Length: 165
Ligand SMILES: [Zn+2]
Image (cartoon, rainbow, N blue to C red; front, side, top):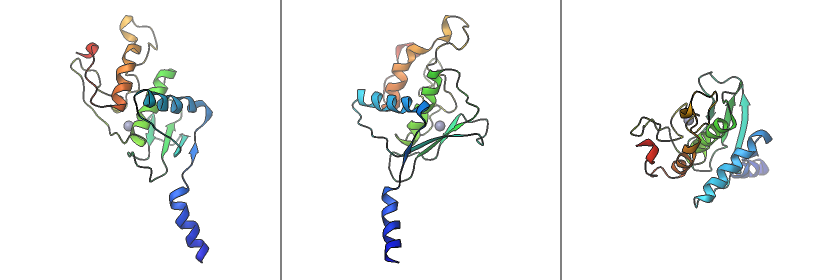
């Protein structure tokens, strides 16, 4: 009996795992690098990222928790079939989910003066800094917006950029 208690007592603190498929690992590493470039030292060793074909169609991905705390196993489930149309949208989707489960950020529906989402944490929008998927004129490439959105992810007080005024 004594050891059962010992095992359970230990497990509570130490049973978090890191399990991210190789195809998505790059984006986790990039999130850590972008944090570091902004003076934030983030370690991600408690994360399961998995594909889940049972998610409602509405969601590209979901996170099981909104918290900076390391007190539950963090799990990001990615809907199958995939909903992104290029690697940049995939990055924005993973950054959004890490915003929930690593940074503890909630959804934010606010818009900037020209109507653009204020943040990657806008719900259900993985195209905020996407390049053109189909070329529909010069306005479809939003790549230049990435520095602002990544800044804002790590610091919600980032000022509104000129292109959004
Ligand atoms: Zn979300």
